[in-house]
Image (cartoon, rainbow, N blue to C red; front, side, top):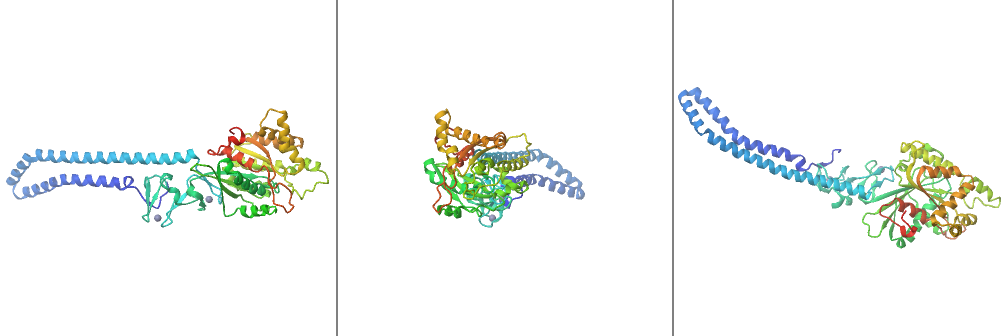
Length: 469
Ligand SMILES: [Zn+2]
Ligand SMILES: [Zn+2]
């Protein structure tokens, strides 16, 4: 452990010195009279040999009684003192070990973790600032500096576990000093939203957050938006409510959108972080490979613009107005292979290894009539009338068949073989093209809730899906 701006605990520093000093003092009381007696006899011998001999005989007569008595008493005292210190010490060390392990296990079992929105590092235990002198404690947990509490060099006592209030102190990222929320006592779920430029990632994030908030109560969840210094949620939400398409993001680094989503009654909150990035970043793997947040992702959402599928877009003919749907020119294959290359490098995997992360693929812009009929509710209903399957299996079949029909089998095979699980969804982040009316998104909450449920320990929406996922 790095040196902390705090005093070491008594049993981990001064305790040893005190034990040594007390025993030293006690034995000094026994040995000193002998030394002075020898000095006295020495002087006598040099002055008067006969008297000196008599003194020696007298000394020898009382020696056994005094010596045995003194040595025994001292031995008894020293031994009892050592046993006492040893027993108290054992309790102290036992208490320390139990608390250290309990604190560690609590964090591991509950999955307590923070993701820094600035440097994108994953933080299991933040650094904490002393409320009085602002000294940074990089390892505030039961340690040699104190078991339940430690004393900062300024004299302030600081709690060392979540059980006695460590989370009430200001917590910062150990890598970049950026403020971390809740004193680090939350479960942060990180989901980068991936897609080419104009696929509709920002619109999807904004409308999904709005929809999750709207349906939170019905899902027995508590929702609360939690701003970061860079997200544009409030601006984009207002724009959408006024029928204006949110501006596409120009950020070439991951931009974190955060909200709390916690089951009613659950004491440890979930902090969901959705990461947006300009789609152009997927053109250049050297650019996105700097975004280490990908490495710590709990899951991915891949937003697909069906109009970026060349064959499908062509099929729509000359009557189709591409600008109305702000169609993306980015090939699905290219976006996926950039993402996979970066993940393989970050996790040191070779091309045969699977990436152990779940992914949701969301077909966006499905308010377009042809897409709604082929991938939306009518198509699912039609499929279920003819097959024994769940709604979600039906959605997968419809989307997969669509990809095969429009020559995107390579994309489909890669994503299915490379990721742990893939679930398809069809949605519309806006609900209709820009026409001055407020937007009415459709099917945006489900993909987000599906993937959050899949990776969250505390959220379980099996009633919604009809099964545990
Ligand atoms: Zn940081
Ligand atoms: Zn202090």
